[in-house]
Image (cartoon, rainbow, N blue to C red; front, side, top):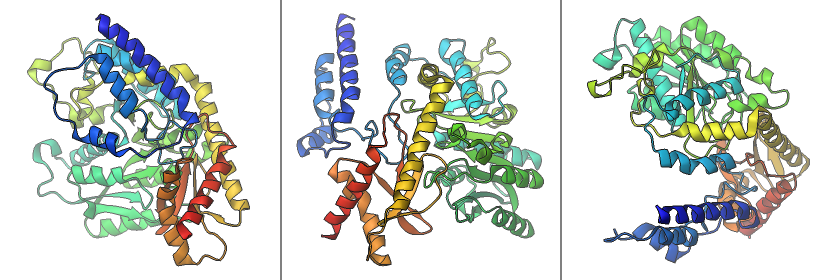
Length: 472
């Protein structure tokens, strides 16, 4: 234990030094060939090594090569820097090392509060038991769609857990062209198939076209296919667009569909200035996926799925073998009865610590700060003659294209495809690309609380410099 105490103090110092030094270094640096070989080709050791030696190797061979998301000029994907409170308590969760499948202990009890806090932050109605933490939005989506599938078959007098999908009438689900790929993965994993995953067109603002949704539903009904679920986005990862949730909720209710919302990244955007009207209807969803490890900065992994009613997921997942029966589990039972995971880590400690440290006021400041920067960046793009804004800024994502004067359509397409990697190689900013309406595009996602207005012109200048390197 003496060695552990000494090494733990060294690890804490190492983590603090790393976090405080990130902003002063490059956003990303290439992995040296020697360290790449060490990271990927280590032989299985015959004998163990002291804890202090392990920390030396972490310091020398791992910390120099982060993903980049801890840096204020990281504008890629939807990966936040870790919250200090989450970093602080992560070793304590590991030291306790509980399984949060169930039982009467701190990890399980605290998860009730963490889930309720998340629901309160985004204004989603919450009943005890109607939500749980997951590894991320992908597993949250699987959990939600499995629950919707179970209900749809129950309505037809079948139990899909017993009969599977064999011989049953096909069921269709609907998501927009901007929906996250986790919806397709969930449909594939659950045996629903992508053949019946309908792609709803989007309007010029990249929001789901509700007229198109109605037409697809009606066409399926005429073809003898049963519509059962529509998935909307409360902040897409491409542009941050928020679908017309209230209108979609009305269509779902009219046709008896399960209404799921992917709010993994963007649901917290409801806290931004004047944003609430864009999120009207989010509270009407049957299920809502959230990712505290995105905008909130909870260290990975920490997702969440919320349900309007707790009975649905329990009907879809509850399976308690004799060796896990617990007479003291209470009315709500175990968390493992509401999702696919049996052994579950103590995610709640990092979620609780992050929210408790920031408070609602701090979270509102974070959301408003980052959305404000995204809008500032959009204004700079509109004012420049070599950039083109591709979508309105609703959350903290700005989608745009670099279009130097005189460059034709084909040249602009090739340039914007090549730019993200070129910007990343330069190391002064981190940008990712995507495709919008079939064309190559750039996207900047602002999540870091220490990103400043002064970082934005650096990003645009890095894009210009990378473009000159490419075209030369």
